[in-house]
Amino acid sequence: MRNLMVIGEIAEVGEVRSVTTKYGPARVATAILRDETGWVKLNLWRDQIEKVKIGDLVKVENAFAREFGGWTELNIGYDGKIIVLSRQF
Image 1 (cartoon, rainbow, N blue to C red):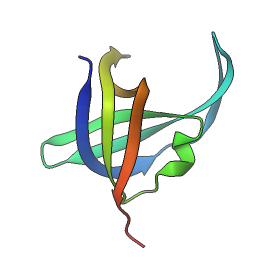
Image 2: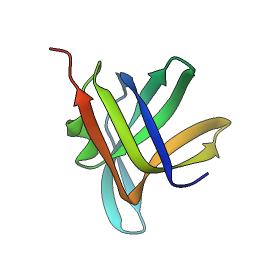
Image 3: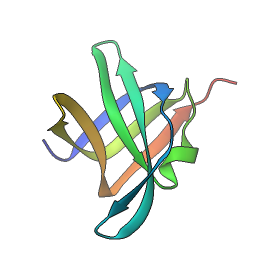
């Protein structure tokens, strides 16, 4: 599925990992995004990792979903973005 828009709360942010992509080295972390219907893994790349914190209500625009390792994962497209709608302090 492509061109998805999802609103949810960041429930968890995993450890930052270093990976090698076809574009070179990158940092990635897996977050859990949840709403009243359930949860999904959200892959955060590079500066997206520092943009969110646990408890943030976020809107993810132009995302795409794919299955990896038996789980559905949400990825933010090249021209997509993650917007923090509210933050708990």
